[in-house]
Length: 457
Image 1 (cartoon, helix red, strand yellow):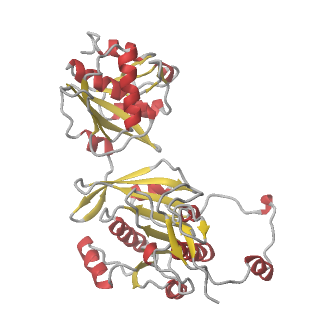
Image 2 (image 1 turned 180 degrees about the vertical axis):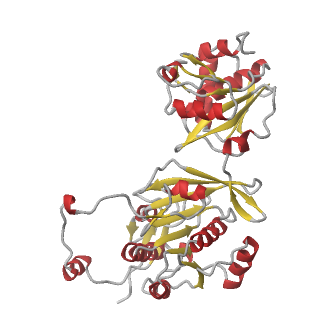
Image 3 (image 1 turned 60 degrees about the horizontal axis):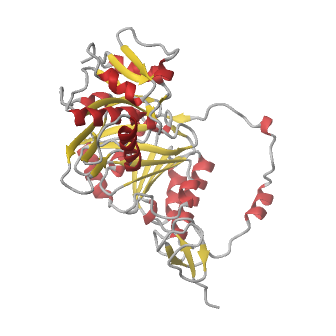
C-alpha cells in the first residue's frame, strides 16, 4: 500500500491530506509543505510503563537553583540569565552572515578553557573551513571537538562516546533523521531532529545549542512548535552595514525574557560592548535641535540612547513619516497627541524619526523623549545640556509613570547627566541622585513649558 502524502503547515504544524493556499488553523498563506507521514513507533505510554516512571509529589521533588555553566562571555551569560543551565536546549536564530556561528565558536572556546568538553557539529561547513575561522579568532583550545555530520543518529553516537558538557548544532535545518522520509529542513525533519536533541540534553545533562535559519519575515524557519520545544530562544540581530549586534532573548525558562546582549563585529571576531550608553551617545551632536537622550531599560540593564527627530515643511499633499527603530503606529499616535494636546502644527510637515546606533526600542517609556525631540526640531530649539528624558504619554496628553525610575536616574547620573525630565508619579518617593535636578511633569504641555524655562535653557 502506498504511503499517503500529507501537507503540514510550517508555521503551526496543521496537517491535511490536500494542499491549501491558506492554512485553516493559523491563516498563514503558502505555508503548507508536502511531507511523508512518520513510520509507526512504539507507544510512549507503553515505554513509560516499561521504564517504571510514576508521578511524584511536588513536595518530594528536589528544589533549588538550577546548575549553571558560565560561558565566559558576559553579554551572552547575561542574556541567558547568568549562564547556560545544564541539560537545557537553546535555539539561536538570525539572518545569514550576522555572526551566529562565530559567536558560538567563541563560546565553545570559552567553555573549553574552563576544562569542559564541547562538541561543535556542522552540517554546512567542512572541518577545514571551521579550522580557518578558529585560527582567525585565535581559538586553540584542546577541549573543542569538531564533527561534520548531518545524520542525527551518528551525532548522538559521537556524543555518547565523547560525553560533552555542551553541544553546538549548526544548523538544525541541515540535520537528517533517516527514519523520516521527508527532505532536510522540512517540518517533520526539523521537529524530529529537535526532539532527539531535547532527549539528549535532558538525559545526559549536556547543554545543546541549536543554530536556526530565519525566513524573510525574520522568524525562525521550520515549524512554530520548534520554539515551544526548546528552553530558550535567542535572536541575533544586526544590519550588515553596521558592526553592532544585539542578542535578544524572546523566551527563557530559566531567566528574564527581556534581557539583551550587545556585541560588535570586528576583525578579531565578535567582541562584547561593556558600556552601551557610551556606544550609543559617542557621536551625539551637541547643541542640535531634534535630539533627546532617553534612558531605556532592556531587561535589567539601563542604557542611554539618542532619539533623533527631523521636522521639515512638506511640499507633498500627504507629508512623509519615516521611522527607524520605533513602532510606526506609536509614532503616528504621538504626533496626533502633539497636535491635539500641545497645539503643534504637524499636519503639513515631513517627520523623520531615528534611534541612533541601529537599536530598536519598543517600551512606551520612550514616548516623552520622542515627543520633546519632535517639538525641538519643529521649533528649531536645542534641548538643554546634559538632560535625559523618559515617560509614557496617554491619548489625553497625560504623562504616565514608568518602572525602574531609580535605576534609570542612577544610570543618567553615572554618565554625568545632571538634569532629568520624568513623570511626576514616578519621581514621587523615588531616591534622586544628589547631583541631579529631576523635574516631574504630569502632562505633555507642561513638559514643553519646563523645557523652555530660563533656568534650563
